[in-house]
Image: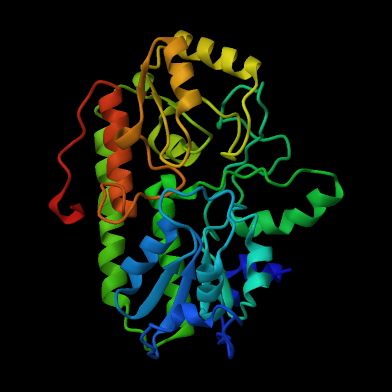
Length: 356
């Protein structure tokens, strides 16, 4: 198991352990790779990998464990992923409990470098997975941990485990609020500079952080084109809690009653969601790019509302393929905001040239 101080405290970033040996049987995967003295960084998610590439520029090589369009909640690493992790100096995780598969993957790869939790310092949202509970992120969770930072979350993990508390109860989808992406980008910058003080990434990091701040302003101004009472969101799973908190939107309900996209929906939950959609007046069900839209289509049809799917689906747990509208973190946020605002019957503001 990974040391908790290492996982949850950025101050633990120190000397970086470098792998002396590649995985046996996997060494051939890197046979065509140009070897240089740049830092080798692995990020767990597609969003975090893109953020990292923008922050470091050409100063480090960056590999994403997850592929575009893949679920962040379940991961079965192949040889190439394990080989990349075995060679890495830094492993950047999105954190907040997202990577439940992390320990097994690190052990299988023989990773001996430094793990950095980029969610440290973010005010986490406590949530309860209950298919019959009302959806209200404004209420304090029963465990009293609402609004914890990642460090505080780690401190309570042991005591909750002894109390029989199921400790997958923090929303890990921090990236849906660009203010949190700024925190993650700063964590990436600090970790890379701690590992390689001569990396020379100040200019690229500053430029990207400026873009993220401009993105946040554009998203806020675009969403404010819609009256608060009409900002109603129905998505596939409970992904947009941080956007809900940051931009005063209301998540009416989700097709899957969980923050985990592998959950099942009962007939009672489906009936309840259809009733909530009709009662609220939500005009659209937004499917997500990493989840089969079939059940969302059924619910939209029964509720008599529009379904956004395919190219119009939201980029929730993963980015799209390279070169697509959702192939970058900023691009995905522009896409999602545009889909939401137009779904509510308004138009977003023109996207600033600096974000295109």
